Image (tube, rainbow, N blue to C red; front, side, top):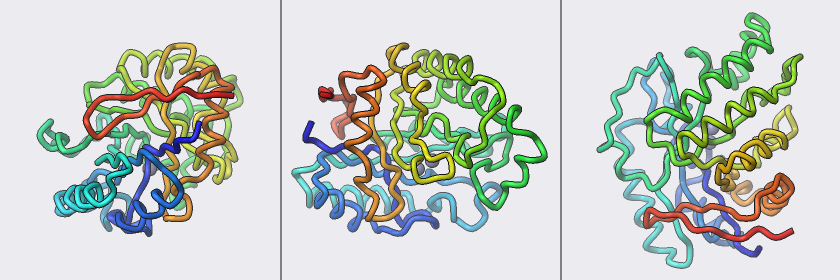
Length: 271
Ligand SMILES: [Zn+2]
Ligand SMILES: [Zn+2]
């Protein structure tokens, strides 16, 4: 398969990524990417993000959307999608987000970065892992993930499904029952899942999701896409081809790709 797809990228609209939208799009084009979703972190309140480090400031959303529109006009050979990565905060949700607010987005990533208000993947809050315990955190994480996947938030894609493994902390039990529940929830919510290639570069040294979780998604019939979760121009197309291989090995025979026109196209995966 010659097309390169990434439906998960960041820009300097948030405080922890470096590439401008313009630079990210140009890097994607140079790498041969044909579909790119720009999916900046949707604004959080100051309670969760006091320094606009995690997410884009709410006053910049219009500018963000317009900048992507301009890039789309300048790059007719690529399908550029306006997206966002929207945190599922569960009972701790402190924003009012209407359908109107989400209307400009072609693709909405559903993400769980918070377990009961705690940013479990933040290196600075890592000590909390010792306080609560890995076994319990995994269980709780998947509970929340399933809640998100089957919620009525219009998530298109559930991103990095087993982000909980980021630091390499693994439960003492077999997580397969949690994987099966996740597959069921994604199916119930009519979501896509992404194979997120960034995982291989964290302590867990493995893409998201793990092979057995990916197999569970495939077995349940959950469609899959690929996201690089790039936070700088250098990684915009990182490992996309090996992601196709992982998907094929898990049983997938096609990639499901959202489009700017609002539907999905299928691309066959070959071995
Ligand atoms: Zn994320
Ligand atoms: Zn992301």
